[in-house]
Length: 450
Image (cartoon, rainbow, N blue to C red; front, side, top):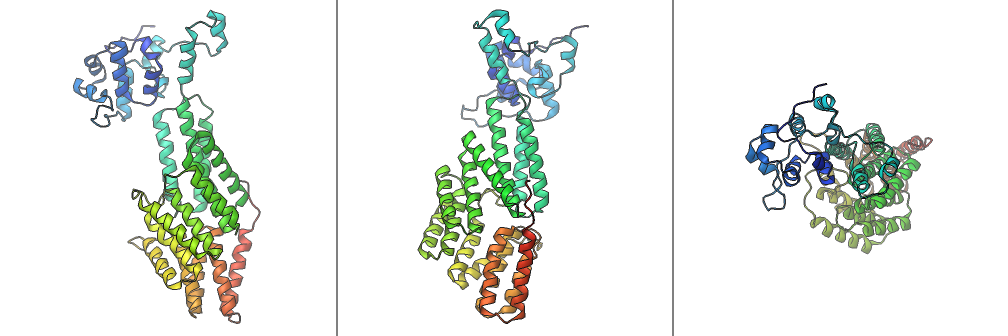
C-alpha cells in the first residue's frame, strides 16, 4: 500500500506522545497545539498555516497564551476546520475524538501499543521508559471536550425548563441523561474529564430528585438526593452538596419535620457559602420559622437571605432551577407573611408573584409559583370573609397542569383548615375539603423506584 504523502506540519511522534499535547488535542484547543508544536517539535507557524489553510498571523493569534493580557484566544469550533487541522498536522483521529482518518488507514499511522500493560514489564522491566508510557495511557480518552460541552448544555436546558415543562417529560429526559452520562463514565478518559462527568451526573441527580418529588415519588427522590450528595462529596463540589441539602430541607419542610429542616439548612451553608443556593436555604429557614410561629427568626432569615441575594449578580437565565433570581424573593416573603397572619403584605407579594410569572402573551412561565400565589390569595380571602373568592382561587391552583404536589398540598391544607374553621357549614368548604382529599389519594399511589 502506498504511504500517504506527508504534510509540512506533520507533528513528530515525540510531540504526539506528550501528555500536554494530547490534552490540548482532546479539548480541541488547537491554538495550544500550535504553540506546543512550535515549542517542542520546531514546527513553524508558517508551516502550520500552509498545512491547515489559515494565514500565519491567525495561527499566531490562536497560539497566543491567554495569560498575556490580551483576553481569550480564538478557538476552532467548526467541524470542517477541525478535520483540516487534524489532517494537516497528521493527528490520529482517536486523539481528537474522531474516527480514523483516511491517511491513517493508508499508512498505518496509529501508534501500535499492546492493550495488556503487563507486557511493559516482560519487554523491558520497570525501566524509566515505561513511566511516560503508562502516563500516556492515563491521558487517552474516549470522549472529547465537544461532547462534554454538549452534555452540560443539555443539563442547562433541562434545569431552565423545570419551572414550566411537564413533569413526566422532565423525568424521562433526566433519566435518559443519567443513563447517557453514566455510560460515558465507563469509557477511558482523563481524571479531569472523569470529574466533569461526575459533576454532570450530580446535577442530573439533583434535578431528578426534584422531579420525582413533584410526582409524589418520595422514596425515589430520596435516593436521587443521596446520590447527588455522595457525588458532590466525591468530586469536591460544594455547590452540588449544598443543593442536595437544600432539597432535603425542602422535603423536611413539606413533611413538617422542622428540626430536620433546620439541620439541613445548616449543613447546606457549611457546604457552600458562595452561590445563590444560600438564598434558598435562608428562605426555607424563614418558611419553617413561620410555621413554628417564630416571627423574629422569620425576619432574621429573610434579612440574611435578602443580603446574600443583593450581593449576587443578576442571572442571565433566571428561570434556571438552580440559580435563584431576585424576582423569586416575592415568593418567599409571600409564604412567610401569610403564615404570620400579615394578610395585606402576603396578598401584595402574591399578586406580584403572579404578575412576574406571567409572560407578555398571558402564558404562565412559572406555573408552580403562580399556583401557590393563588392559594395565598385564597387564604387571605377566606380570612376576610370572601368564601367564593377563596374557593375559586384554591380550585384554580389545584387544577394547574404543572405543580409540585407536596409543596402545593402544604399550602392547600392551610386553606382547607381556614375554610373548615371559619365556614364549617358552608357546602363550598366541604366541597373543597373533598377535592383536597381526592388529590391526596391520587398522590398516595404506590411509590415507583424510578
